[in-house]
Length: 428
Image (cartoon, rainbow, N blue to C red; front, side, top):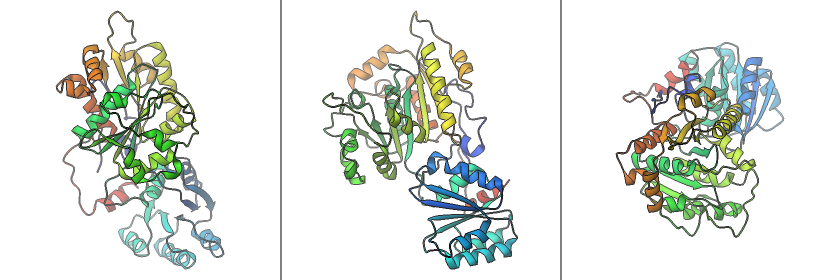
């Protein structure tokens, strides 16, 4: 299904310069720790596989590239075990491709999955490849995202909805209300979209998610990060505090008895566990710059930067977005929104000037509403609970739709031929 992003509030289309599959909100779940070996015949395909190996969704995979196509693959595996995934580029005709694959099957270990990159757009060939057990057939020329999608798709069920979408929300500066935005967006995802979600409060010393949701759980994210050997789905489930039917909280301890210095991979096992069973995980990322915050932001499926309209926020937001765009070349650029706009007597950078400097429009511009937000914070409520019809509540709903990929055209039809048609559409 092709998805189209809707304009939100004052935003122009923030995805107009991106490749179609990225701009349309396609969600590709990351691959597990697997070995991938590619045997290419052209430098263009080798370059695409190399770039795919550097993509965040294949960060756990070990990717190796060789030239020589199927002939080289057969020779390589006569005396060595095969990896989890083999990518074969074949420039020859259909019968030659099938013959080479039959030779490869004789030396291929059970359980190895094969992806073929060819130049023949033919349904009969595709059926023969599938009959021989080929997992996927890509029509050259292929791009980086084509390889990423194909490899990652081998380890997710075609019949199940994608799970484990991770949304990271971070402030361009301290005190801009990023946590408030994260908590309200997560609440809107759970209530308005009926999507099971978890808010993970990563500000372990000073996190406010427990206060905002009026929860005081005895356990939370600290129990997981300090017990990495115990982490599995059942253990993490016990740490969750249920806020609504579809929303749970992985709370921060918000105490100062210990310091919270972590290595870059400290939260990996916790997020892997959440990703395996929860459709949407919202990360409330504190305004600090460390190995683990950088890793979490780069590894997220979508990022929302929250900024206020002043010079420091503008500088920080630009630096942050530029770095993340460079580190995530195959993803949508990070979104941003403006918060606390219109503070009386405060000089501000106008939203158009902010957008010009960042070369992108904000998803929403949230006005300064001290009465509304103050009441919600002091009562342990969300904005929509205080005033369901307020325009700010509508903004949070719009953010929830865009960040979950639900802002899409309705009424698209599908059929049993959709997967096959989509495969050949990628060759266009």
